[in-house]
Length: 119
Image (cartoon, rainbow, N blue to C red; front, top):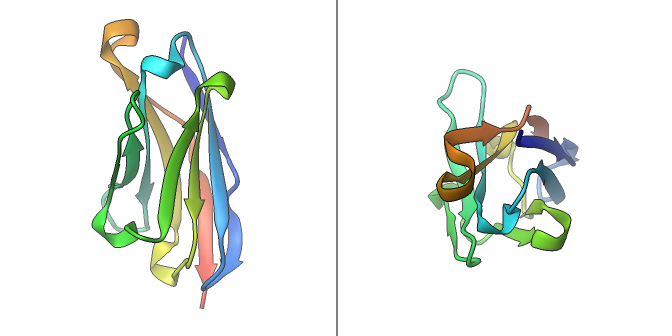
């Protein structure tokens, strides 16, 4: 059974930084693609960043140059470093992991962590 647990959210002033962590329990995490998504009130969930098993990353347009995704396969953890935060970054941030060859077709999601950026 694959489970994801996020941490690191909180309240920060505009211009500040936060680092989110997502610990993934499950075998062969190194083969998984993992990523972060966010959902603000009244809006659809959107991609923040994803990182493949080979370390290649993709970012949403609104966070390019400010956020950095990384992974530590030894710790089964994916990180999201968020710098230069803006009030528009306020949302619940969710971690997702997939590994079709190992875990099958299911998408695994965490419970979410709240990030609030004050102006």
